[in-house]
Amino acid sequence: MERVNQTFFLSHGSPTLSIDDTLEARQFFKSWTHKVLPHKPKSILVISAHWDTKFPSVNAVLRNSTIHDFYGFPDPMYKLKYEAPGAIELGKRVKELLMGQGGMKRVDEDTKRGLDHGAWVPLMLMYPEADIPICQLSVQSNQSGSYHYNMGKALAPLKDEGVLIIGSGSATHNLRKLDFNITNGSSVPWALEFDHWLRDSLLQGRYGDVNEWADKAPNAKTAHPSPEHLYPLHVAMGAAGDDNAKAEQIHTSWQLGTLSYSSYSFTSSL
Image 1 (cartoon, rainbow, N blue to C red):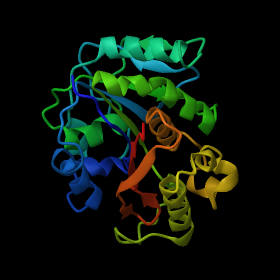
Image 2 (tube, helix red, strand yellow):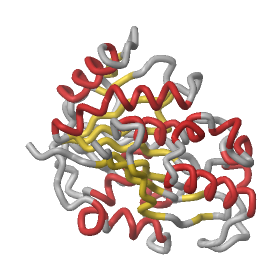
Image 3 (spheres, rainbow, N blue to C red):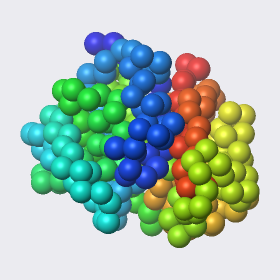
């Protein structure tokens, strides 16, 4: 089995990514296998901002259902389906790693949950055949960036087992600040400042600062009033398995002035 050398953080933006061809980010996700990762992984582990639990949880299903966990959007979006196979054995392996190397006392298995839109919307564009087994892992918004970074470090061995590890969240996420008067591609100053701080911190390898983002970043609480959309980044950073991993920005674009699609890869130097 071929090793997956990189882990990824993807900003999944708005659910309209699923249907809106005018979004730059949609074209980025659709070009995934041509421009980013030509090798087909054995399975995929997705850490999504839209599954937030008190304790880490993995979904353990034979086939993933499609969760339409968004409201007030165009009807065609609710008809979309992405029913990729489940990855029950991967879920068990995740649990083993988190409770072993990760030192966690409890990891739950959910035998009913499918894929939320943080997982299936980007994956539908990246792997439209829906033929790769997928397992989801939840975030814990009551915990810290360092907690999620260490969670990722425990999961690093999965790369050697052919697993693609994706954190799916958003580089900025304040839905109360969306500006419907701004055309796609433009951004407001506070959001751009946070986005640039995050980019520079990652590219300079200042992962400690990113773990302490709430204290270190400009406009932190405006960019992320709650942390669940940033924590998948910390898992992807940690899962590179190397405190000196090299970060690369693989995409950036904007929607509605404040929603950044900045996305990153992490490659271990080991």
